[in-house]
Image 1 (cartoon, helix red, strand yellow):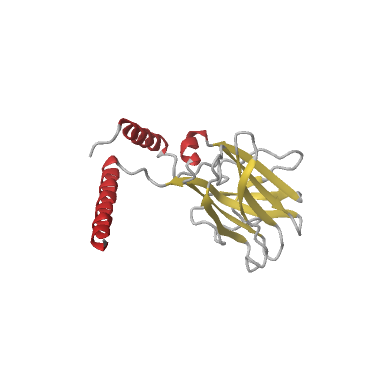
Image 2: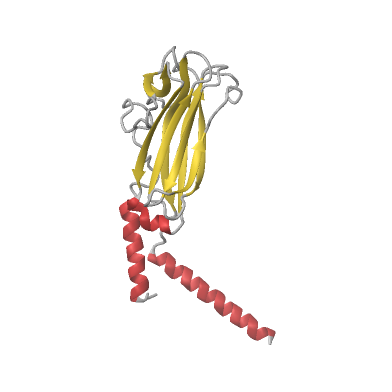
Length: 230
């Protein structure tokens, strides 16, 4: 089946666009979401303390306590002496502009959050979807987990938020904050934070041909039935 020059060009552009972006779809776009590189990629917010990256151990979360199987050696914690600690980073999504405009790009925001025993210390991880002017179009949030949510067990527990990325999203701002509600240390915990995009694959030209042929067949059947009904 032959296509008009306009349709052929559109299919070619879609195919090239998908090919250029395919390597990024499904990958974690967050910088250092696993704390293995200290706090690299994260910036403090105003006058608030920046959270810390520490090794798994007895003062925080033991390697044997609940948490990701592939937890590595480090996690994010609120830190010693801070009642509140936070960090932020922003990623640019201009490489996905065309796909995002179609309204067919989905996101997955995931992470492991937790706290210490019966204390209410907690962590919140939020993604804000911004347009080119920095206006917020929507958001997704993980946490907080209360001590009751954790059954008063020290450790990290999996959280996720899934959805469609708002059309017009040009960048995503992430904020990870920890709050102390008891004890001397800020025992808000986080590890293996991730943000990934996904989109439906663009059909190959052969698929379009089959689809159009199928629609033609259905139209023929409809006409045949219409004639029989007369």
